Length: 291
Image (tube, rainbow, N blue to C red):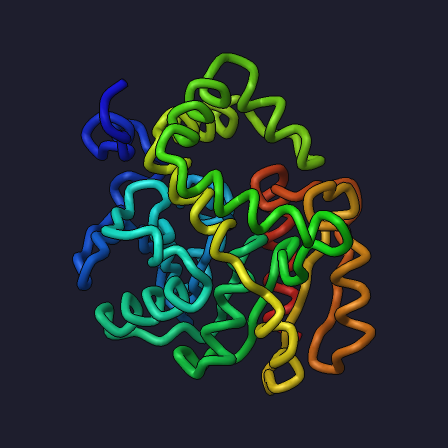
């Protein structure tokens, strides 16, 4: 078994969606890959754990008709390289995203985050790293595991993340024919052939898997939840009714408790709803921004 393998731009990026919009930037210990397209108010897209910029392949060009859209691969994911797993914690990722925006000389007016990406966006606001006019979450993962899962999952994730063999084992399993599809279908979403193939390609790269495991191992949401009432801008949570990864009831409960949060239920779509039906999601986003 050779050393861990990071996705390679010349090999894995040869047919990457919107490759002509890809840019690279080195900031400290992070070599960023991000995509940018469109003109207008700046809209920052933050994907979830285990994904990359390919997650926005359908939504991004539609939003670019109205916005200047910036979408990075988060640290340790896709083609963004890191020097240490410690750069995958919520505070570290938030600081890194803000540093990228500073390097680009731009400030997002809107942050749109999917799943864990929504938590990063909100943490940027709470930490006063970014000052958008609103945050929109797509099936936002904002609440920790509860009950026995809350006791067992964090130590288990840390143990897996610290074991260098685990990313290799997972990449052998999840990158095999049919396994990536089964994992993705378990989120309540059904993707097109390109979507399954791109995730399968990433799952075959142990460095990408390692970044996702490190992110989950270092994830602590209780401080964010405690500070959530301090957010003084609108937060819109779009909820896929078929999401089996983040229970829709969580977003509805948050909206009931916090006056700044509005929940928008989207029927018939799952956790990856922006990949299932990007035009429908883009239309809802435009409605939220216009309102």
